[in-house]
Structure formats: C-alpha cells, structure tokens
Image (cartoon, rainbow, N blue to C red):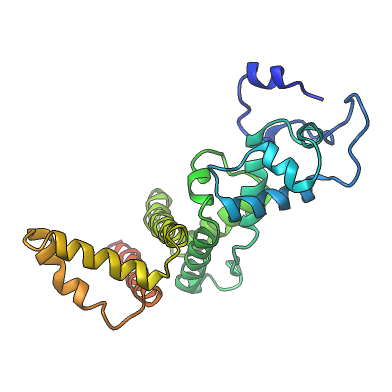
Length: 257
C-alpha cells in the first residue's frame, strides 16, 4: 500500500487512467478489505458529491459512508484526486451519445443532442464543472463522449482548422450555461427556497435597492418578458435560442466556404 507520506512527497500524477494497469492492492501488505471494490467506492463518492458538494468531500467522510477505515479505501486508490477522477468519468456515462456514423447529414440533431445531454449532466451534478478543468478527462466514458463530439462536428463539413472553434463555441457555451444553472439550483437549496422564490426575491431586491441604475433600467424590458414563464422555462427558452444561433453560425461558415 502506498504510504501517506509517499503520496504527499511525490509529484501528482497526471491521470488515474495513466497509472499502471495492475489491480489495486497487488503487492501490498496486509489483508485486503472485504466487501469493497473500486465500483462501490466510486458509487459512494458520486453519492456524497451529489449530496454534500465538492468542498465537504474527504477520504474520511467517504470511509464513514462505506463504514470502513480510510486506509481501507487507500487499498484501491492512491489519492483523493484518483477518486474524483473516477467519479467524474462515472457520471459521464449518463450523457446520451447519438449515432454519428449512419447519417452524417443529421449533424444538427447530433450536436443538439450532445449539447442538451451535457447540460443536463452539469445540472444534475454541479461538482462536475469545477473538476472538468482539473483533469485530462481521458477515462473511457469521456473518450467516448469526445469522439461523438468530434464526429458530429466533422459531419458538418467544416474544414479541420475550423472544427476546434466550432467545438469551443457549442460546448464551452453549454459548459458555462449548465454550470450557472447547477450553481443557481444549489444556492436555492442552501437557502431553503424554490427556484421561483429565489428568483423573485433576487429581482425584487435589485429593483428596490438600485431603481435608478442605468443597467437595471435598460434590462427591465428583458426582465418583463420573463414574467409569464417559470425559471425552468426561461432557462429552456434561452438555451434553445442560443443553441439555434450557434447552429446558424456553423451554417453561415459553411455557406461562406
């Protein structure tokens, strides 16, 4: 078993997926903990992250959830980062992957399906967004997702030098949009308020405290257009409008070519 001192002294590994392929625990001293395996540990990690958030997650908290000692968990993983990366790849399996090979002309539908499913992932698991930028995301599920994105964008007919820009435009937009939604929902939960209550309270406070602000006055027409929709309906409408604009932008590039 890798000692805690060794873990803190050696350089951080770039990815758990680039570690040696030997099963965890091979060659380690002591008795292998019974009733544990990587899948069970990963499932418990996802449950805790969903319930309590990234800031409260720790190896000790995970061990308590599993009713084992922290050292038992280290039999299967070397670091906390290993666990977070395993959890990150595990939830990526929830993203629905369209068929990108049968009908290349259906690239619009393919891109929209990938975008909507990625957004849903970010909303269901708010802890995913801060972790996506910390790891290489080369686990099996992220690789399958990345391949689907590459194929869908390739199906557009854009030149290779334009495809990275198209991927960035669509999926960095989705990342930002889904991250904001997920964090908004988390704030509402922490405040013990529904989405509608929190939104009305926030808008009402800003209008009362800053009635003469030019930005607030300018935004009033936009805010009034939202009064007949729920927060979820507003998000859905704005997301689909933005996604339509991005698809139209890709079509515009193709027409200029």
